[in-house]
Length: 204
Image 1 (cartoon, rainbow, N blue to C red):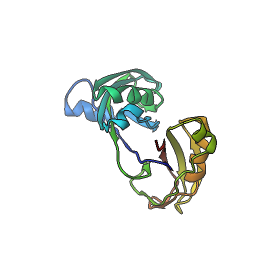
Image 2 (image 1 turned 120 degrees about the horizontal axis):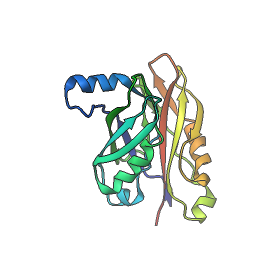
Image 3 (image 1 turned 60 degrees about the vertical axis):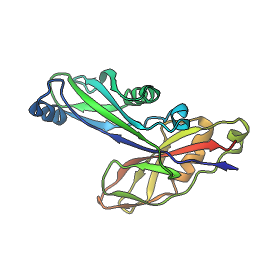
């Protein structure tokens, strides 16, 4: 039997300046805003070993919002590269006139849910899920892995747009087709962008 296992992936943004005062941390947080996030791909080896935990990264955001430096401060070695690879794709806005160094904490968490939604707004709650259909060609070729889907949810809770932002090409369309059928409760009164991550795993 083929099944799609669950992966809960929560990304938490913490901002702190390299000068360790509360005032400087607050100032850095005000200057830098994340305008686009890419969910990390949970490493297969870490999943199989049941490894969870936080990876803390120190990043420098230039005046134009580009990320110029990213390094690991702490976190399990099997999760570190996935965190770095994801954050290097993030987009930022820096309202200050100088580069800002902040810390980002990415929390990798396994759970039993078939899919997991990372909310970009606290008013967005998933109310209906559909499991992706494992493509036959992917099964024949033994293809597995995560496929993160970025969805736009309107004020009615309907998915108006869905696109794959990662994962194997032969798994992406199945994940997109499933994500389009999701329904949400959206209390924000406006469209909200979230990421739904599907994990395709073949039974042995």
